[in-house]
Amino acid sequence: MFGRSLKLFRILGFDVRVDISWTFFALLIAMSLALGFFPAVYEGWPASTYWWMAIGGVIGVFFSIVIHELSHSVVSRAFGTGMTGITLFLFGGVAEMKSEPESAKAEFFTAIAGPAISIVLGVVFLWLASFGGPEPTPVSGLVGYLGRLNFVLAVFNLIPAFPMDGGRVLRATLWAMKGDIRWATKWASGLGGLFGFALMMAGLWAAFAGSLVAGLWWFLIGMFIRGAAQSSYQQMEVRRLMGGVSVRDLMHKDAHVVPPSLTLAELVDRYVYEFQQTAFPVSEHGAFIGVADTAHVKSTPREDWSRLTVRDIMTPPDKAPLVDPSQDAIVALQSLQQSGADTLIVVEAGRVLGTLSRGDVMKLLGLKMDLESA
Ligand SMILES: [Zn+2]
Image (cartoon, rainbow, N blue to C red):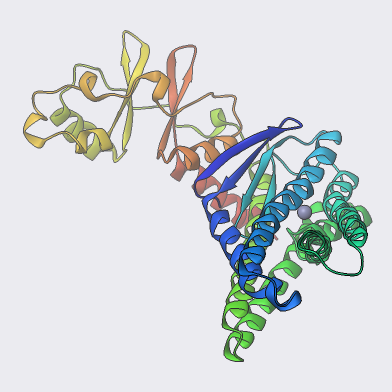
């Protein structure tokens, strides 16, 4: 879901990162404030004043989103759900959870904490702005803008479209009512998908009616919400179906182990083509010493294939994609996705036990979806 992100600082034990996409968002806010919003509301001020207000506005938006996400994280941690940190990206922020919340109550309070703090911030900013007196100043104008922004943030996030905060509140309520998180997620994410689609259509309509930029933004936000709603339902299904399955249950026990003295030409002919695998564990005197994979063979000039051996090109154990046999299969699938590797080598106490490929996990998942999903 995220591209490159940059860690900014750490607060209350959480890392705050910004995704590259957020810089575009920040630029867009700055431009629309300096060239559109402030000149329209406060006429006749110098252009440099609007730009200073806009820069203050972007910084204020940044901290408003960080405080909103932090409050989700702090409440979630209080309920015992692990949080990895906060990442600001395109349209706002995301507080990343390691797993699904423990209970409907935990989800309800975690979700409501963000909009609640945004409303508090909104009230505080508007109250501060009221000290400016009847004549608007750049400072009171900026603070007043931040007050209204926080109300917008609260209201937008309360839309009952899962996985937005309002959708999480809805899911928690349905979950508490029927005691079935799967049913609750199905409905809440279904509504989320519908809402995203409606926003996309409204965006298209606005674009054709003349508000091209606003329409495009609505369309993009709608597309994002729709995608997030669908993928969060799929993720929950995958977690449910693969729950309790370990790497040991799923791995190929008869792994094709290669010796380090094998030449690359032999590796390709006798192993890669024969077994149609891209990675092979390398073992010497029964001990695991590395992984030979086709990517390294490919980057070696062909004329050297009969001269160089597996030992010359293998990845050492500390850099190889390894997995413990007791690990959950779903965690193994995540590390396959993150590392970009096709096969994990299952190693226990320095010995190769087997291999686990992405295909193996997907095959079982496909079978389970076919037989157990109603
Ligand atoms: Zn939120």
